[in-house]
Amino acid sequence: MSLLTAARYQNVHSIRWDEAINQCGDDVIALSVADMDFEAPKPIVDAVTQRASIGNYCYTYLDDDYYSSVIDWTKSRHNWEITPEEIVAVGRMVESTPAVLRETVGVGACVVVPYPAYSPTPAAIRAAGCHVIPWNLKLNGTRYEYDFESLEFLLEDADALVITNPHNPTGRVWSEDELRRIARIARERNVLVISDEFHMDLLHPGQRFHPYLSCIEPGDQAMSFIAPGKTFNIAGLETANIIVSDPDLREKVRKGIDDAGCHNPRFFAQAATVAGYRHCADWLDELLALVDHHTHLLDQALSDIDGAALIPPEGTYLAWIDLRNTGLNDEQLESRLHQQGLVLTPGVEFGNGGSGFMRMNLAVPTPLFEKALTRLAQAFA
Image 1 (spheres, rainbow, N blue to C red):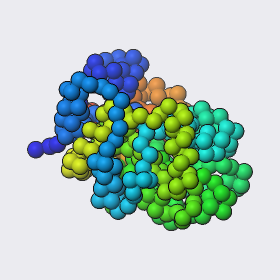
Image 2: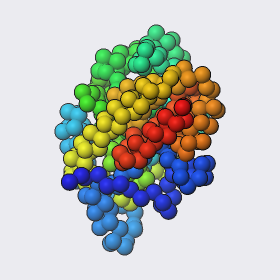
Image 3: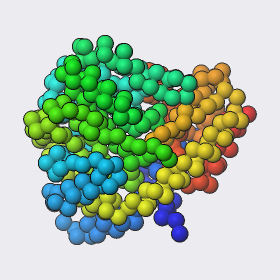
């Protein structure tokens, strides 16, 4: 029996679905925003329901069970050993990032970001009063790569670097060698590295996630953001952790978070995180198998569309589709899809290097996904 249950999206104030319905009408299929069309795993639903039933929605704290669940998960899933002291619990990365940057590198700092980029990341950097310095990824055939020669130049006058692993939107899972090279370049220039690892559990077959903090040396200024939100489709519960190995840097992070008023955990953080990390590995494994299946279906569908190609994803449940050779501009691409009742995320929303691409959500029930593929084909017929 399947552990995956299709989620109801009507009347739940879903950003993805309600915005798409407003754009294209009730018959639309929305495969844009990165949340799933599956209910959260039952152990999480049960834990959150039980917590809500108490009726006392007070300020809370996180106990040892919370921290041990995070530690056990990273060890069992990724062979990544962390300690309770290294964990700084927060709500959302995009609200924590400005607080962290203001306290560590300061207002006016220059922060390098790989592009194409998840748009809230540069927005959060600017919210800290910092300057965003684009670092364009290289597309070698159908595989994105870091341009290290460019990075060495950019970091000469930079204060921080924010990377994403697995990368959103391209789906690259960065290798240990690539991450170690980043660490060396950053170390030589005394640059802080922030690694967004929210998608770390969402890997395609044969891929291995390498935590950035496992690729650094003692004294390196670095931190990683991790969370159960993408993993178990509980992003709306807003619970995350910043992992910081260096004690002095960790104190700055804590101060920045406290000064920004982000010191209390979300009410359901303990219940949802512990339930997910303790009891939902099988659910995740089934989801990953489905995402892999949908990736193959999409690849086959794109092979029948002139000028279309899939950038093979290594991680995330998102697909980055190359439509540059269809002869259509970004406005025309979006218009054709909307005419067929299909909403994807336009690549231009990810900035440099995004024009001519579309991002597609794969984490939906197969019947809906197959219907979306039919509409995709019709858009280019």
